[in-house]
Image 1 (cartoon, each protein chain N blue to C red):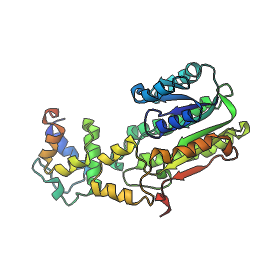
Image 2: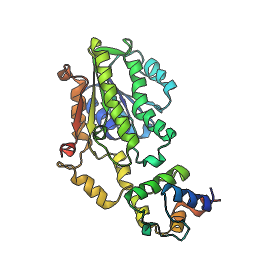
Image 3: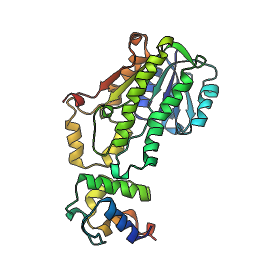
Length: 242
Length: 76
């Protein structure tokens, strides 16, 4: 049975990824803050799914993930879904605010990889998938921190792909457009109705669902993608081609 | 933060030419646009940890109505 570590596992794309992996027979080590939100999957897949409640902003806790939670099992995959979205005009982007979004969106990923890259924690040929965003390559007013942090992921992915190629570990990013998740619902609650309509209309295939994104994640973890590394896959219903 | 400090801070964040008072109609300001609304949401979030929704923005008119939405008791 192959082992995959999933962060941000209790909602949105992270939870849907866990669900798909479990149905495909993977063993999933899931990280999140609130166990209640993943209780349904824990009940359904009690043998295959393991959960650790952790705040990924606390880097000193990461050793717990790799030295205790995995209990000696080596990973075949990592999917880093934890992250935050924020709309804040540049006038209000203090160093603390920039630090906060980079901590979870970028630095946590680098710290996870510092552990994952070690032979004792991962198998040769493992697959790593980072969640970037279509906003990693496009811009939007009020999204300096979000766009910058998601762009940073693309740089990090290419560098890590080269560094880990000798162990046949592949590192890729996916860049979703607007997908119907709790994070998007929060965003939509903060913007006006006609603005929501405008965003929806900018997606030729409509707003995405989490199930539109997870098959690519599973592919990037699978044997079929063993010659693909350092890439960014845009999954956005045609949003970015206009 | 008291009411006067809040109003002064808001005036600075929105970079207004005029002096803001509790009676000023926010949406009547020359500077009012979607960016100003975004600044207002960010300012209130930073100072009070409260995230205003699009409905809140739709419903507020004067600075006083904004203060009431935040909660008068939060100002000392």
